[in-house]
Amino acid sequence: MIFLYNENMINVFTFIFIIVLRQGLSMEKKKIAQYKQIEHDLTDKIIMGFYKKDDLIPTEMELSKMYGVSRVTIRKATDNMVAKGYLYRTSGVGTFVKQVSVTSKVTSLRGFTDEITDLGMVPRSEVDAFSLQKVPRHIANILNLNEGDMVFYIKRKRFADDELFVIETTWMSADLYPDMSIQVLQGSKYHFFEDTKKLKIAYSYHVVTPIHPPAQIAELFGIDQDTPIIKVGNTTYLENGQIMDYSELVLNSPKYQLRYIKQ
Image (tube, rainbow, N blue to C red; front, side, top):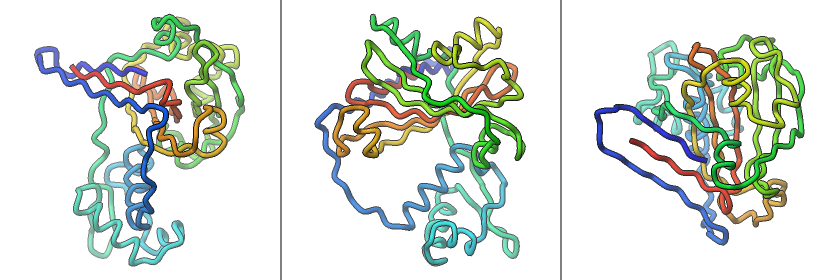
């Protein structure tokens, strides 16, 4: 998967950052302190847009019930986030989001189908799920939808030469894009939006997280659960300002690496 950035055409500085995870690479398993897990989770929610700038987050009591930990643990996590500039507190009112995620703005995107084709391989997509459902609360915040709005819930497997490279879960507004179909999803969403609907894809915000695969994912990829892989949360925007979709991609990293090119 390749993301191309072009932030300033007069800036001749080029930075290339390549993450390559190869099969057999081991990662030491360490137990992460509860407050750090909570800090990471809350930070991810800010990054993904679940909590937006100046949003009031739940109280310490509500968060302690949500995570099943003490208020002391919650306070330690939020104290760290205040110190890092993600949150701020207003006496007698509560804790608010101070800073939205610093994420990269993608100005040139290539879809999986085009990339795999250019690599001389044959792309293929299998649609495992395609259903209409009420938008989950956390997805509604990301897609800027209202509670009760309907979305398409989509799960796809993306193959290259019959090797499973990506497992993709997507949520997309059914009201904005009622013509989405299994037939479209068996091909390229990007081609459908740009070539058929004539809606230009503008950019994408994404969050990259290294994970150890759950047993089911490891089995599908044919790897051990000790093998580190990459998970990408991706929100794609159109030039008309609409959000195309939000997807969570799990990459078979030993076979399909994630590369950043920034210029």
